[in-house]
Image 1 (cartoon, rainbow, N blue to C red):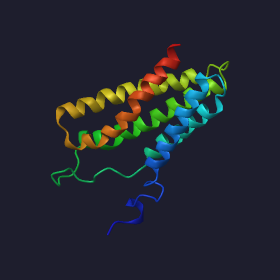
Image 2 (tube, rainbow, N blue to C red):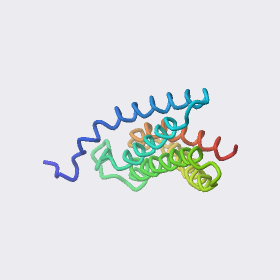
Image 3 (cartoon, rainbow, N blue to C red):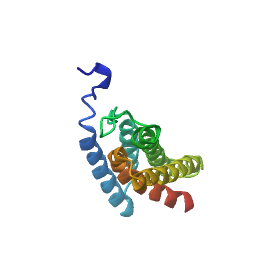
Image 4 (cartoon, helix red, strand yellow):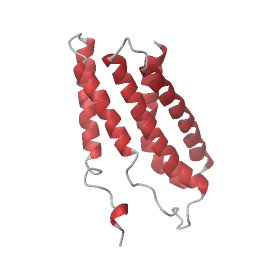
Length: 162
């Protein structure tokens, strides 16, 4: 019987729904920003996604054993736990950095957040891609984080270089 520490919280099952809601808020915010109406909805969507990404880093989804019922090796642990957590947290950093670029555009502090986030996402993506290509089976469980990290990387690069 699993202990209480290994059980995911009730919020963990609702994170995908909340994430989709914040993506919808972000889309509405982008439309309103393009129309020149308001940036508040866009900022709320970005900060909400940042919170969701940060919370996703702490979900329990890591297998204790490999697919073949062997204990995880260090490369498998790195591919299935450490790198995905770093990618989730750096994606959150990028979302907050982009939001801060709208909230305080004259303060250039958001560029430090974007620089840290982009460098970390880029290195984590390279490492995770290496593990996927080299055939580490448990690395496939970390692919969903790439679907969030790579767009966050591209958006952060845009705001960093503009």
